[in-house]
Length: 143
Image (tube, rainbow, N blue to C red; front, side, top):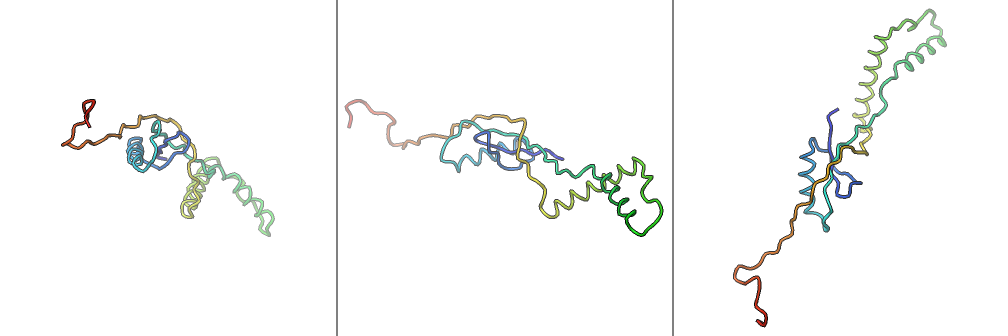
């Protein structure tokens, strides 16, 4: 899986899903304009990939198929001599199938934890424009 990154202004709530750390930082800098407060920092972290538990199901599937075979009216051995390479191939196929099914039905769990958090300073965006025709300061006693 390709790593993705999110940004936060409080180090607790991360937003976005960006391909690089820089892209997440750029998005955070752009989002600063929509805030009414100035955060203490910008935090960028890598989302931890969620394991949807789609692997290591071949033994369970093979056992279920054997049990159903024996309970049916069929006779003879069935799937009793599956070697470890064939079982690994089945597991890979099941894993891929389940991941595709989850994606197709929008059931892939979303990442909720980050690691490798970097902190960046918030740029000083506050400035005061003074009219060019007026002086910025005045002498004491002037009105």
